[in-house]
Image (tube, rainbow, N blue to C red; front, top):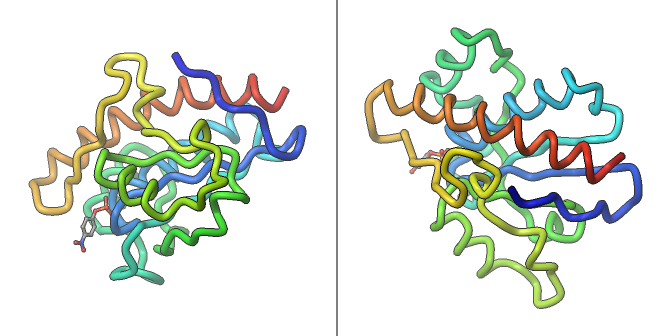
Length: 169
Ligand code: 4NP
């Protein structure tokens, strides 16, 4: 299991979750990680943000299928509004996690030369069951895709929260 890199500012941690549109995968990961961070009593030190590399859905709530999947599992999906990833996030975030390899390639292409490569990686590098896997894009598929995404996101966020807790303690 990878460790989370040390915080830029001691005792504070900001983690960014990034997909293509910021209406399906990264919002689900944002809601789940935020809930687990709060459950672990880390929400005074850890900030979770999410974005898409694309701008098509900026300002919109998350996809209704993603929201329904989260709501059925007891999460609050109502507060999300899509935003686009900005280059300034590379210097402001301790960890930037891409949902799939294409998102990671897009982020690497955007990253300034002085960006720390250890802070940019795949979200599922923290998945204990399949480290280095991708979160598949459920946008064009059926509702089962969203259930699959939630399952892998919940499992990955348990390990990710543990890694972040160690980095900020
Ligand atoms: P996401 O899914 O990257 O998980 O938010 C998508 C949402 C929108 C589009 C593609 C993927 N789109 O092409 O609009």
